[in-house]
Image 1: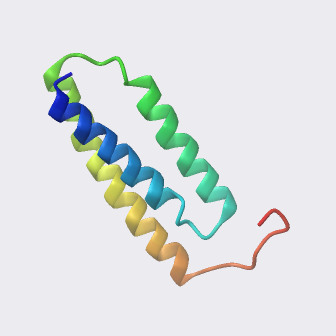
Image 2: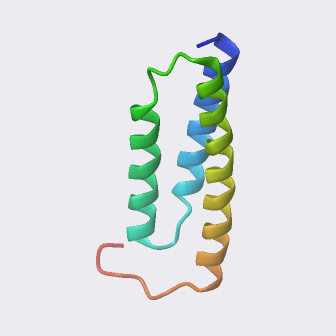
Length: 84
């Protein structure tokens, strides 16, 4: 993986983690964090440039989805659970 692609992937990873931490619900928050970490760990050894590009595009779509879901979750917040 090229240095620029690697830095872009790390940047995407950090943005996804940061956005996932904004979920108001504990269950959604932990699920999103686990999902992001697992996806990046599963694909960290990918070397094919085309496959890496597709994964980056999918990651950008998932980041947009996380942002939308966080904003929707904030509009319809539920009561805090004991865990929170």
